[in-house]
Length: 185
Image 1 (cartoon, rainbow, N blue to C red):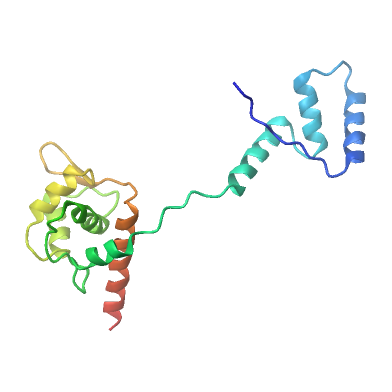
Image 2 (image 1 turned 120 degrees about the horizontal axis):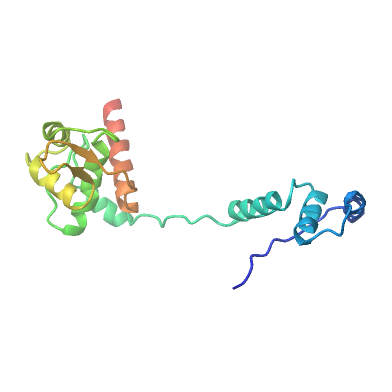
């Protein structure tokens, strides 16, 4: 098993030597391994070795390139946008399975977060956001895909908080933007 490496840097070697010398003079016994680590860490401005190590780990994390999500497929996004009208309402149920889920994510985004809703309240949200009058289909599909949960008796529904896929996020943003632009007219 390999140990993590913590690079040690001192901008002024003379100041490092003075600090170590003073700390060794104050020590009444031969310092052990951990004491030497703490002395070295204090000599470069940290409180102790744990503080020094935390600083190094945080710096590596901040300076490393962040994992960025790949850009959405804009051709697919254009196809998906055709399922929505100018008001951001789903006009028809997509026949292709790969088109269904991104459209459901748009409807999922309209359901209030961290609230318990009745079946009628969920139906109302869905009716306001689609035009083909089948909230039961949409509710069932969202439940099967893990976007919402419900109690066994079907009285209470909750939106499951999780991050949508890249295409779904782009479609939600597109629908929100086009709806905002439509309201400005």
